[in-house]
Amino acid sequence: MNKKEDWSIELSEYIKQGEPTRVEKTKTWGTAIGLQEVDGLKPSEYLIETAKEHIEGNIDLPEVEHRINEYYKVLGKRKTEEVENSEEADKVAVRITEILSEKSFNFNPTELVMIHQRLFSGVYKHAGKIRDYDFIKAEWVLNGDTVTYSQYETIKPALQYDFEKEKEFSYKDLPIEESINHLCRFTSDIWQVHPFCEGNTRTTAVFIIKYLRTFGFNINDDVFAEHSWYFRNALVRANYKKIEKNIFEDISFLEKFFYNLLQNTNFDLKNRYMHVDYNQSANDTNLKCNDCTLDEQVIINIIKSNPTIRQEEIANMINKSVRTVKTRMIAMQEKGLIERKNGKRNGEWIVL
Image (tube, rainbow, N blue to C red; front, top):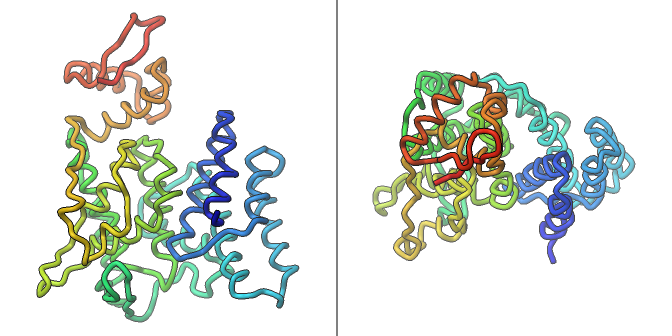
């Protein structure tokens, strides 16, 4: 059994117990630890034990961070390369957990930079700093070729452009497949800018999770926890083309990831499917297409998890007025997306 299976199994026990606070903490830790895989990093056993104490409510996150810092300070000069990798994984996982546990969020490039600074302070000398050089990076999924990243002189204006374009975009009444496609393109665009020397994928992931929550989504944490390496390779394929080999940017892999993330679909997220030499027809799966908008999908996800939930509670969860929620849900019933069974007082919502 490898280390990833070890920590996944240990933490999954808290989900089986079903206590809401522990379940939420466990899923956040799963995402935070799983994201370290994008850079081939594995957590230490000490982190897992400390995370379990936090999940059980015995210590808070500042104490978790203090213990991890002290643990590696004691090791001092005895650190091997493996221990140094675990140190980065542990410290960054704690900080991801902290950020994802916070409600605050600002949609602008400064927030992206701030997240990078918080994640990698004391880990990278360049934490929170925009890169000042151009680079290439050999990718397994591209047979050693590289994505073309933004030139360092254009990073700030490129980010500003992508954010302004997203701010101006309206998801109102847009079919879910168009909304997910647009979210994928925004995500791949800011990743392609690659504003930092290292840690871009983890920073992008944390930012996007926070952004998706502003829509009211309670995202499927297992997707990032179990498929973070797929997420990175999907970003690579979304930004790579080789015309002479008839290879073009392919957003479909990232879309499958987002469908699983937001709609709890079950697309098979295999890294080998994305390799440029893979026979695409062998994995030719159509994307799920529902006749609903992004806002409607949020409500569907909520009532799937709690069919007896009241509209007042839904309004509070998605930060909308009760009147707006009622109007939206009437429209959803007329579209045949949901229906009410057994009346107002003792009834429940059914997803059609």
